[in-house]
Length: 224
Image 1 (spheres, one colour):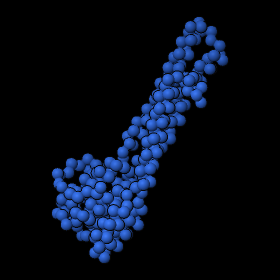
Image 2 (cartoon, rainbow, N blue to C red):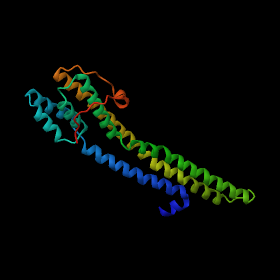
Image 3 (tube, helix red, strand yellow):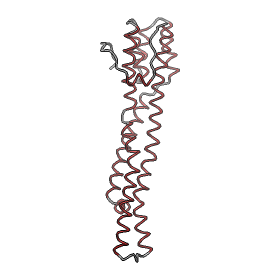
Image 4 (tube, rainbow, N blue to C red):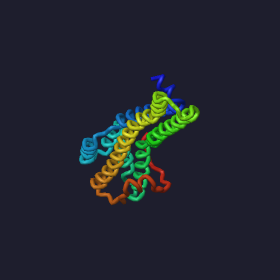
């Protein structure tokens, strides 16, 4: 392996560095999503059970035991239940935006590595081919076939290495992106369910508005 890295040149080490960074990002995201995983239907059912018994404090206590985005949003919702619906809407969308941002953290880094490593590999191959043909020119066009083949396969090493890194990184990126989108939808579902439970008329906003909307400067209780 070390011999292949040396033969491929300095770009191989750059791609190797990208692969190490990508592994760290993937591991961090795996831990995050595993730690904050929540069964939506079970969580909602337990919250509604407490609400049906008019035990709001019990619902808050149950949610605080969890580590998920759903639980943090539920706590904020229940703590600010007596506020004006418009104010509550702003609070919920601000909290939802924070939770979505947490879920999407470091995904941009994975996307960059997934796109850049194949290009780095292609760059290494182009540089290798230029070097190879330069040697052929220096030999007056009478290059040995074995020498030519050897130069070409060495040049192709960087492309192969770049693709080897990029394929799993892109797969991981799309997996985490789907997980983040799923949680974004669950946050909206939770708010809708709680609104219906309490018969509140709170303005609905889709996930794109949730991510980009500017909210009013309202003081509210947050979950640590």
